[in-house]
Amino acid sequence: MKTKTVKLKTAVKSTLFAASLAVTPLALAGGNNHYSANKKLKDAWLDGKVETALLVNRHLNNFTIDTDVKNGKALLSGSVNSEIDKELAEEIAKGIEGVTSVENDITVMKDKDVKDNAHKHRDDKTRSFGTWYDDATTTASVKSKLLWNNQTSGLDVNVDTAYGVVTINGVVETAAEKNLIEKIAENTQGVLDVKSEIEVKSNS
Image 1 (cartoon, one colour):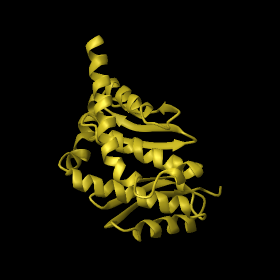
Image 2: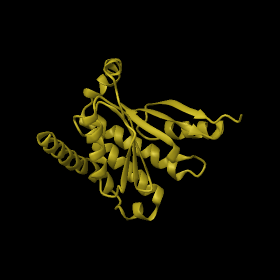
Image 3: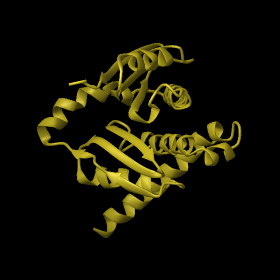
Image 4: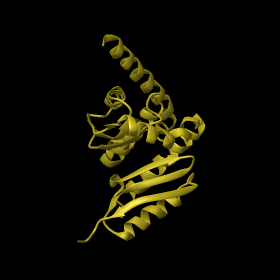
């Protein structure tokens, strides 16, 4: 048990160091003071840091882990292969400066689910760092546009990018908002295609 704990701490430290290197160029582009002045933007910035830290971890980057930050609290969802992977994701999120707490709703897949899910992330294993970095930048750009647009509920929309293809999902109030979100994503630099899984709330 002690050996497992030491390995886990080492993995977390390595991940956070790598994540800091990956995030620094983006974060320093215009200074970070404006992130603190706007709660929504700060949460989006923290969300990007958490997502980056999970993506650069070689144990977790082939899993589907969704992240969201609200008022400094990191919300983790998705699926991993084991309790150790789930614990590792939580420890990494907790280690991000600015994150006040973590709600870990990640599901541990059963053996059958692991086999059925394996093919979905095969392409991600071959994605180069340069491609991943471009995808992470694209995701951040789309999220920022949605947050700054007062006609879209940016915090209720999840954005993921792989090889320039942006997948957006969530639940919105109207079809007009759904169409606007899709247009914003389509018109963001770096986006090659948009897959929309956004649902409109039923009026019934």
